[in-house]
Length: 228
Image 1 (cartoon, helix red, strand yellow):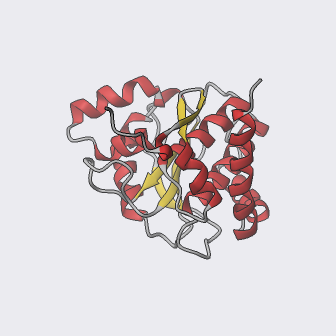
Image 2 (image 1 turned 60 degrees about the horizontal axis):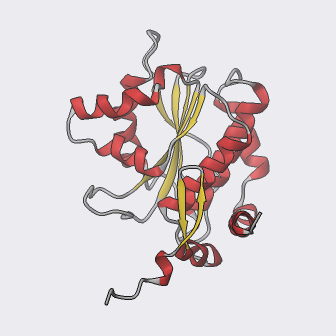
């Protein structure tokens, strides 16, 4: 007789390329630290609402592999299909995990935003630069792949609303990603550079809005689970 399945691993939703599990609902009901799957789901949802061929919201697993790819040839084979030279905006989730053998490791999320018009990789960390070294590793890994013959991109730390607990970092990543992506789509590009979305972040993201986002994402998944 086969062993009983863990109910938390039960598949509850297939959304685009993302498979959600019952345990994800428990994480969102939390408060708990978010896993890769929830961030990937939300990024896929944002991109589906306003598709843009020159913008890319990368799943956490792709960002992690880019940052930790063991050799240059493998890195190029992995990066080339992403067509980074053709992108004006790329959002990279950053995780503090250093062990490529441990799925879902790490204890902190932040967001690295590439803006071609500004020529910058802007790091948004809701815990005062805790992930800077991990973001810089990713920047050094992918910086050469966005090159279109102009000046090399720069790495900068950007204004970021700060979390007030030890578990909402993933929600801040999702909230900031939404602000940046909505700002980009509304302007059809990054013509104003990163200053434009900094102003939006100050107005739209704080601990209260992030707390509400947890419930919004939970309700979105439950709605998508309903029979059509």
